[in-house]
Length: 52
Length: 458
Image (cartoon, rainbow over all chains, first blue to last red; front, side, top):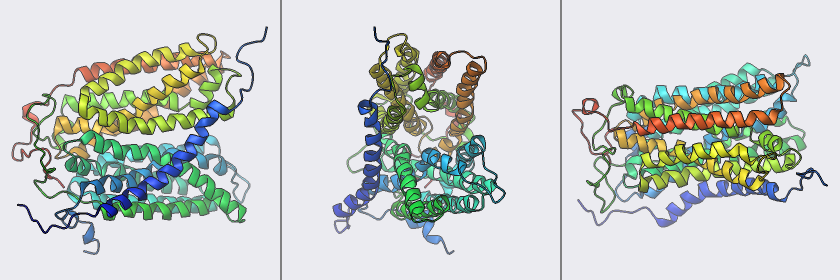
């Protein structure tokens, strides 16, 4: 039964709902990513093979 | 009734409600309760606390807080799953928010007065019940809103649980630093602040969640008649489901997948430093742990949504074949063999993505086999596999490491054994997945053969 006067959820409301969960996730993701980058940027504690 | 607004009848979606509002509601819950994975940030501050008599807690005692919380996650998910099917997701999410928030507040009193039992009771027992209720509450609602993409929908929510630690960890660290700088008791105040913040955030989910009206289906979507025999158009009630071999096969699959993942997660930082002695600094090892958590989270979404296209059985086939091969190869990358850090890291992140994927794909597998009618309750009982793996996994890993250390054997030699045991476990999972067949007709719900997308239970 189609009702042409049905009020649909506003796209702005949907965007806001997603923003509420995406913003803290992005903040945490950025924090974790910066930590993860240390794997590639941190200097090695010692050479991996003995120098000859 | 004062809390009548939580009833299922009050949360039925009005016409025109967009189903794309449901995943953020579910994510608000899962991003919050996923904080439990970041509980380790409280470990050192709790160890540094002293009671009035000068006593301090040890690492083992503090470690029990997390274990109790995970145990109560599994227990409450199993116990309250059937109730949730009747009460609806909004009420379950509300109680989850109350328990999770209250758990923090009670734990804060425990930290403030140096009484560990209060932290066990608050964060462990009451918070753990909140974890279990929150974990399963949005699952069947998402499946009913997204009958065309159940893997994607549940993957999104369960991805939130993986991502919760990414928020909870830095949030706790920064709050503790803030209160410490202000000269206030840092752990109790941080716990109270987090309890309040998470309660408010979870309330967003409570008030946003809606269940679809009976008979609702996405516009223009018709259930496919050309699908695998493993996708049923019938339903199985929870009290029948757990008598089926399929339930126990999936239990074994979840158990071995989680146990294998714990094999890496439990010792990620020391493992990479031990296998590449002198080649990986402690700071780089922290980066490795961060990378694992990103792939753990991303794998939940990637594999669960992929399973919508290739099927659940094929997805787990990949987990258990590729996973077994990778667990076998992983120790061969170490310093005295291939000596390849990039290969070690590359393999580990793929394995962790499949660990997360195993969690996120299981609800859709359950829905395929047992229908959508009682899927939350069945999922709740299946999560006991997680609790069991949470005990057995660390026992295997720490038991072997302790044995090597106690016998003065090189610790790095223990890892190949641990990882090859995990490889063997995945072979068991492979066999279990291979044995999964359609559920026998005798278990079908005879009087309510509702077609999957209909909201029969809530």
